[in-house]
Length: 520
Image (cartoon, rainbow, N blue to C red):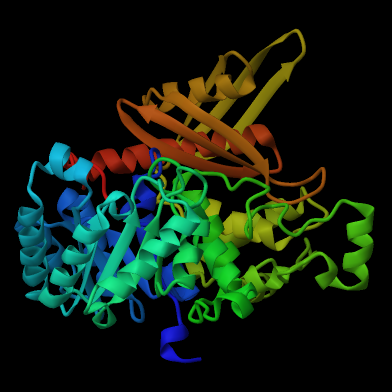
């Protein structure tokens, strides 16, 4: 495939995706997502907004240092302090990129920036030149481009490319564009910006009208060669263009688009989707394209008959191509540690000896409760038990007495620093009683903001995965817990949130965020 036929995938899950309300990730979680994105094969990871806080700066620097293959970008407004912060955070990156932005629409220039068009062009040029002092790879975004005057937009793009921008991004910042209009904008840019051949045209579409993916694909059809997107489509307001959807659309309909995101390792898609869902707390809807639980399920008798005879009758994508392995029973109660280690390795999970001991103990406990253990169960064990923060509090024992017309009574036993702490209490239902007991033991008063549960696998003995969002004195954290017992899973999730809150309290890294307004 010719170089110009490849579409670059610029992933902004760690920046725009994390801006979604409630989606904040800590540094360890960001690092795991970054490593997953590199396994996935994205071309660029936008790791954060370095100037916004100490925590974001450190996260970008951490990702920049660890990534071996993909470029790492840091976002910056078109001001010197932002660009300096980005340049400093990216200094250890093998392939650093500074992404600067400045609004170009009339409404933004008049009401937010209060600058004239000529001033905007000069600020943009100065910003790109300053960024080129740090890196050779500079991207410029005229924020709210889809609502900007075209003639003025052409002038801005020509000026920033002349100043050294290697990528020009055309953001549909507020999701206002429609495919035909947006595609024409890209085509017109190619026809009216004299030096456009010296830069890659990128697109960054929001989903306010549900057209982010359609707009991005239409842009590709009209000459764009970089798509900015997020895993599961998370992001500001209604979210961003969905990575998994555009990647598989380009691959499945290469006959139509004439290009593809050839660097993406598509079998990593579902694994990466699950990781991002876990750390952001945003459940993937069952009807979500590509990664939803129902994406490859067929209930209609006609569909089932067709798929059994020939999968392509009703499946345009093979499940295994995006990481749905289709493996059923994997291991059982007679399996040993070596068998578990081998299966985890096939799932792409490498554990240390200490982590393997903990995972094996949880696996054996699960085998006593379930007849069948699936790959999803093993992944849930690793995510819930192994890859979490070092716990200050651990669950030792749980006793619940509950039923219709019976006041629930629970006894929760926790362990911390080698000491056991036990509390018996009642509440408005057994889960509420458990949470009250944990509050009293830990002296961490939590306000439950959200509670959700879903099954990890099928069957009556399926593990339940509980996700909670809890407010501890203004610190909002997410907790996840799994178990075949819903109440136990609920307790584990709440305790996970308590431990995260404790960790944040003892080692704060983030400062108050800067008021940035809209970003691309």
